[in-house]
Length: 95
Figure (cartoon, rainbow, N blue to C red):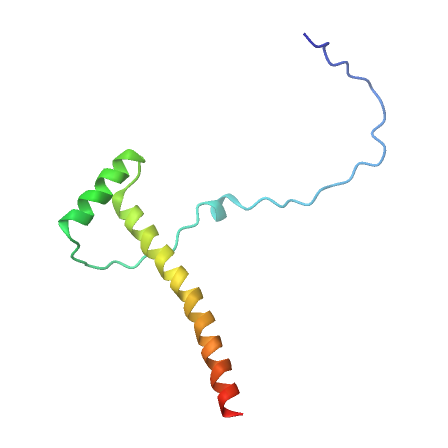
């Protein structure tokens, strides 16, 4: 077993204050603004998400929402890249 730590009463030298970099508690409770919609989903899809939600101890609506958010984010980035490529190609053909 290791020895016990022995503390001494030595001077600290030049201690520095570290700026607070942690987020505020209210920033940690961030939620995206939601919009209520009515949508008809297939029974098969809803049953799948309900089963998966039970396995992962979460809500099935939350899983669907996250899936849609990930899809939208992926295609929004892809759309921006494709648009800039099309604009560049169009400019090179015109010149």
